[in-house]
Image 1 (cartoon, helix red, strand yellow):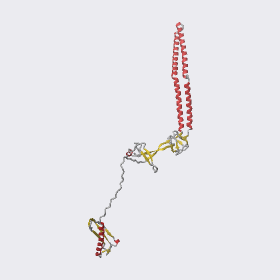
Image 2: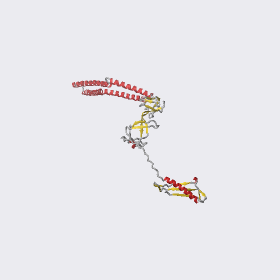
Image 3: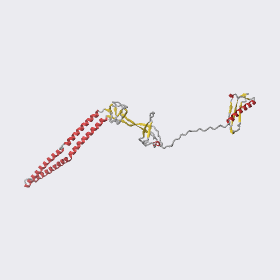
Image 4: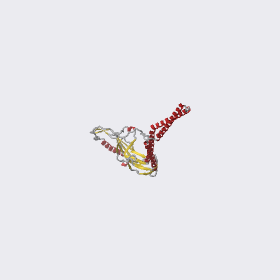
Length: 365
């Protein structure tokens, strides 16, 4: 049986005070008939003044009676509590089983991406001129090669017409040179050769006559010498004229034709350049897409280096992701990817097309 300890704290300053009775049961071996030894319980019981228990300092006998009554009640509770309870069966936890199968382990890499269009062009004019008119607005779908805007080009058209006339004149000169039978320089050289031959023949006849007269003794030696000098000079002039004519006949014609052809090519180049300047005043779309920006208005000055409008091809979207190296090593070209918009719209599937090892200085990935 367990030991019952009681304690009564009574204030002695007044003849009638409230008290607290504390009963504690400590676990000790207790013999129960028919069941052997059982463990008792140590329990604390507090009787507060609100339950109507009062103690009087004048009558200690009444206090002992009350204490015995309280202890006997607690003892009955203790004996009931010491009775051994029946063990409850342990609950059975359900276990889900499945057959073992072979499969690949998927590594999912999640990161924020920035969307880019498939193609984007900031169309910049190649000439500085005022905008004559726009043929499209923001949001319009355009085709490849479609005319988007026109710049003022009257001065460019005039320059193109002038260069076209110069080109036509050069072609005419080339046809005249190539179709001529005897060029002027060759004709003049032939005339010079004929005159030099006549002078040479005259000098030879004079020399022959004077030598004959000198042999007959009718002419002085001095006149014969003068005739010989004149003949030598005439022969030198003839040889020079003949060589010049032969040179012109061999290469002069080809050179003249080449010179005329060069003039034609130069005139054609100037004409093509002016035509290109005229074409630069017509702004066309480099590919099919959507006009996303048009910052200028008709009449404003379009300058080289400043975008006139922006065209994007949004038929396909490219998502660019910067990730750490330990994550990028698991990503391969051809892997499936799922892109979920930030607004919660339906996800879009795609494939990895490029894995670049280059690092981003902004994100250090």
